[in-house]
Length: 250
Ligand code: AP5
Image (cartoon, rainbow, N blue to C red; front, side, top):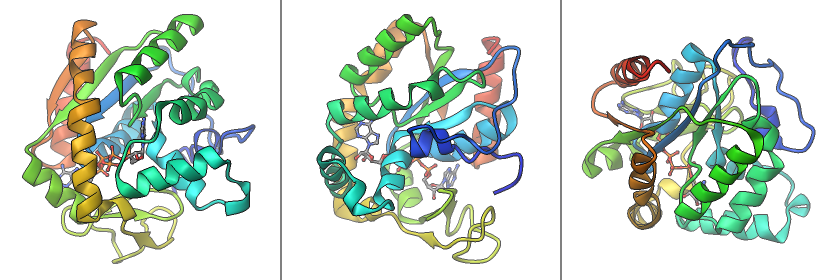
């Protein structure tokens, strides 16, 4: 991982963990939510937005995956159950997700802003987040909703490889690492996620249709939704995202 990239320790580890590189002080930090089906490319865009515009990627999926590599004896029963839901491709119960986010509330209050990736994922979570924002005087700038036909999403998921340590995301064809199987950032091994196997992918897509897609209407109603076509290369999608944010003065 490069010296300027945030290791997101405060978010990934929780408790009193500190990020190795504190976020730069911005005159106007960006506060964004990323929406979209599993595998559409939210994490990839989050990495580009973080590198170029500053806010840190707060992915709930990454927190669960980081907890998975921690010692089994240290996990609460709720977390053990959450990891089992995740392995099957199901959503983790709202109460577990909300407890985990509350424990990391300082990352949402961070002066560098944030990119919430994978949270909220249900209307119950979105309502809880709204309450947190109003209690803390935080204003959400926009919700970026990435859209792509399902066949293309499945192709992205099946070729995905993730760094087991720093969680950087690659694709065997479209975003290959310099050395096959090795992370460009930290040199650790790349693995395929358990929930990228076909049976779990089907369950994840169903959960998305049922529970997460309605969030687009929820945020459209608040005037925050920006739809971004997720066709093309990551750079092209980033350029579209950046232009849409600039157009709104974000
Ligand atoms: P989470 O980690 O949030 O996964 P997800 O939403 O399923 O999203 P993904 O990480 O799979 O995909 P992505 O959109 O980030 O795509 P990526 O950039 O990697 O959640 C996992 C699980 O945790 C859930 O199923 C649930 O169990 C649990 N969970 C988490 N949060 C929860 C919550 N709030 N409530 C309840 N449960 C929760 O890209 C995919 C691939 O495509 C990569 O290989 C990438 O290199 C490639 N790619 C990206 N962009 C392009 C492009 N433009 N062209 C070609 N290839 C591309």
